[in-house]
Image (cartoon, rainbow, N blue to C red; front, side, top):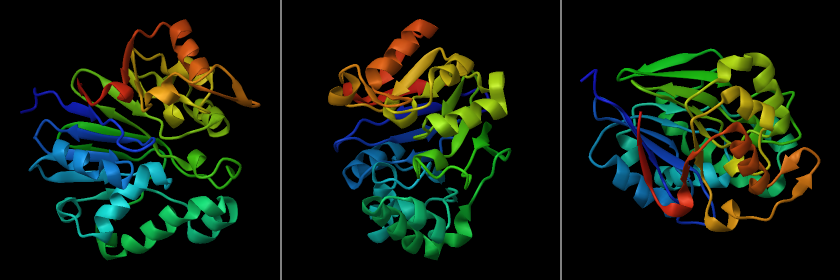
Length: 269
C-alpha cells in the first residue's frame, strides 16, 4: 500500500461560497478539511463514502468553513461518530469575543459547545507539530497568535502542508496579508510547495511575495464564478480581489488551476 498515491478531492460549493476538501489516504481512509456550510454536508459524505475518517481538520471558525461540521455535530451525523480525531486550534472564548465581529460569533460559539462531548478526540496543534496518517506527513506551519487582532479569525487560520508520495499540498485557510507576512518571515523559501490552496478564496488574501516563496505548480481556487471572475479592484490598502491574485499567478508562471466553479476535482498526489 505504501506505493499507492493519495487523492485530494476538491469540493464545489452548494452555497454562496465555502471551502471543503476530502483526502483519501493510501490506506483508503478519509481526512476531511473544513467542509463548508450545511448545504455541503451531503457532498462531503459522498466523497468520504464508507471509509473511516482518520481526522477532521478545521482551519478557522468562520461560517463558510465550520457550519458543515456544526450541523453534523448537532444532528448526530454518522460522520462524527466515525471520525477518530478532530484537529483545530481556535482562540479562547474571551479573546474571540473581544476581537471578532458580532455577526460572526455564532458559528464559533456553537462549535465550542457542540464539540464538548468529543473533547477526548480533539487535538490542538501548534507551529512545528507534525502528524503522520497512513504515510502522509502533515506539518503545521502556522497557528493562532494573539498579536493578530485586525483580521480575526482569518488570521488565526491553521496553515499546514500535506506530503504525498509524488507532490505536496499547502493549505493556507483564509490567511490575510498581515499574518501572511509573518508566515513568510518565519518560513521564507521553506514554503515552497507543489500545490497551494489559495488563501481566503483568492480574495483579500496573502500578498504576492508569499506566493512567490511558495512557487507552486498548481493552484486550488475555492471560488464560484461570481468570485473567480470579479472585477479588478483594490478593496482596501493591501487587500485585492481575485483578478489581482490571478494576475500574480500568471506572473509567477502557474498554468495548472483547479477551480470549484467547475465542480468537484480529484488530484492524485
